[in-house]
Image (tube, rainbow, N blue to C red; front, side, top):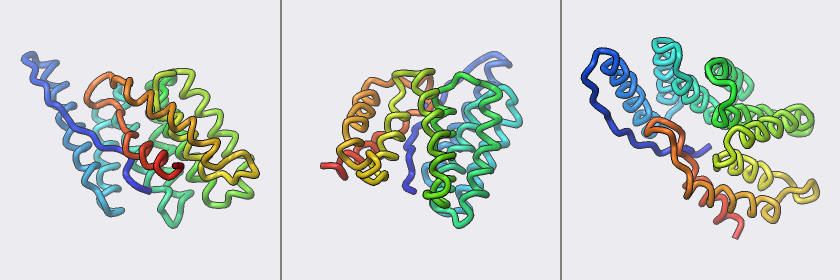
Length: 210
């Protein structure tokens, strides 16, 4: 699966001791996000996920490190031989993020991705379980942030890959992808570390449905 994210990091300097600790966190996250953007091999992706997890364990109260560790694993699951194993690793990580922020749209987006990866193992037999879970997660993602473009991108991607006889295909996916593109233009991440991915993926989806 192609990389979903291209993130840049803007460093911030602080003077007090407490702010210096925050600066260390931001610097660690920024450098790891850059490593994520450059990672190409399974080994590199695993190293990035492990580094995000270590940051999360050190910080204890920040959901973003666990989110990015889970996102990395969720992306890997789509191409993994043992999709269940990697998806389960992603689940363990996103559950740690969820424990820190239960009303977070981005966390439910990763939960949706994990469902899609699980469903790919055997779509015919797993559609009922993981399709329903994915839909529920998307509903939660939209509920907690109606301005977030990523739930709509994920929904459009799923529809694009669903046979037309089951209500899928480009005719169903394109309007939702267009909504995702519009929302992304207006979306303002809470900080340089917060999720802001999707443009290249949404553009590619729209181009494939011309």
